[in-house]
Image: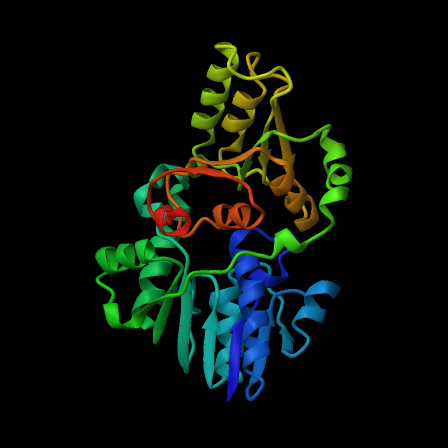
Length: 311
């Protein structure tokens, strides 16, 4: 069987949750599906590291700067259809003549519309509704997302499959005795509070910053205590950055920007606690990754997080 896979997220320059999921699930499919052929579609060439990890696949590079999924990928599937199609991240193309399977990671735009622009909300609503309707099977990361999908779009329960993602093996990456070297770029030692994720309203980082400022103001934290926000800037991150740089927090909050896997492993191992107050998560990989590294976690009791952090 020839199985086509949308690998566009796996070739992103900077990998975050959805991109890491795409890369890892494609890698696993290539490993267990040796009896099949896999064709990997992408708008750009993969990095050397990604190409090596996915070397068992047959790459089809089909560039287009805009509307790649619905125009360029659709055209490719129409001209050279595979026997089945898998999309690891949200959106099935408008034109596909074969069996389609899609992973829908979350419906956060319905729960917290203010965390997205109007255009983003409209597109996410349409594309999720479309993908859920036409897919042969829908994979979701959690029971919470499954329930959301069924309630919001009346998706048939029989076609929705829960498959909890596995965290990256960051606890095996690097030597803990060398962790202070990658942390030196931020002037960090050990014992800081860590928050991981894109800087955006849904992550509820303003509340975390306010709590940290209050503890400082009440003298309940030592002078060396630091809060580390590890993640690239997202939509409305200016508000978060402004609060992080406010006078009552200046010098106590470290904003790292995007971090490599090696740097993230060091952060997990050397932190004192992971704070994860997110308002909504389809899964919440940082919670699982932190626990794999032996780091205590304080997280919100909402959406999928009880599934990830529960006993």
